[in-house]
Length: 532
Image (cartoon, helix red, strand yellow):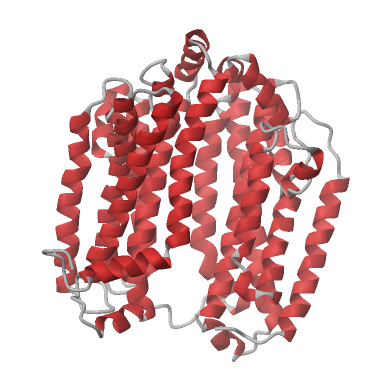
């Protein structure tokens, strides 16, 4: 045991690392790999100073660039890398920290696992300290690795480590935030949701500061803004890294103090009891499914609408943003047309389609959790049949995906139509392009339903297949992937609208396959035993 650490901390860190070894590897590879690939792609797309200056001029003229990525602080390759990566990587590190801390504190306490651990020689504060050690060590490891890999591409060493530690700093702050929310709320889901809502609020605070120079000081109130204010490759303000350290020094003792003041299994804020009678909207199998998933569906829909409003505003600047010939070639390959604006919009709609599929999978895999946790047996003890239960979750998943696509088409159509002074045409074409993605989303969801019904222990495999589909669709054209490889993904079968001719055949085929998959799933679910 390390000196000063609560009894059992070292053992719990080892246990948590072993439990999450795959998850930790995926997070680390994603953050480190994305930093290297971002710098590499920017170096390839903008090989000279002139092309970078042209791109930066376009970025500064795009109304949606600053809220999304922040201000670009120079025309060097390092400055572009920090602009493109900094905010996104900081958000990803924060999400990783929140997930890790809540999983190994409140979630373990909620499931009773922590009670078994406490039966040994383990101090009450050890699980929280161990979770914080794991999260902070992961953040710092990722930050140091980012600083180590970027110089391989010729970027300055000091700026590389400044960028890596700026990303790590945001993760460290939200490890502390999650430690506090895990003490305040009884439910792991509420603790996670509150921490992520705070992250979204800080992101919006930073975005407002980057949008309007008169309130630029708001960036200093946000941990996400602190990552920008380090200014990697543009002055390297090392002293800004003291801000996340100070925030963590306040949040961690606060979390430990709150832990001492609450009972085991309880939160400082008592859970609100449900209504004595179910309302009409939440009655029955479909009402229960809606109640379980409505927070996820509404938050995804709102987030996509906001993102579509921002990214749609880039359309009028796409000719400038495309810069060199290599960027134009890549955009036309992704969008399926030589018109850069149509290619950009088609790529955007394809990306939103992939996001809608992620929502559908999150709903369906949550249904599997209902079975694994034993709650499904209570549902089946009443009048709800198996087919109705599965269908209720499928309807919410499909309806939620449709809502996300509608938000994507509406947001993009509004921002694009207003900027081009063709609001009616913009809304109509964007809504049509968005809903063209729905059959591919349903096909991906059908795979998850089939696994849930026939092979429930392998339901999570649907996320692996989803990752393959997304990678092939988004990265395949730039890698010059062959026709047979591209056809693996359902999203590659969707007509690239607007700009390309509309083809109904692939959409009808994918829709029919999704319905057939649902029918097979219902039959399989009726025949198998329930699993815990």
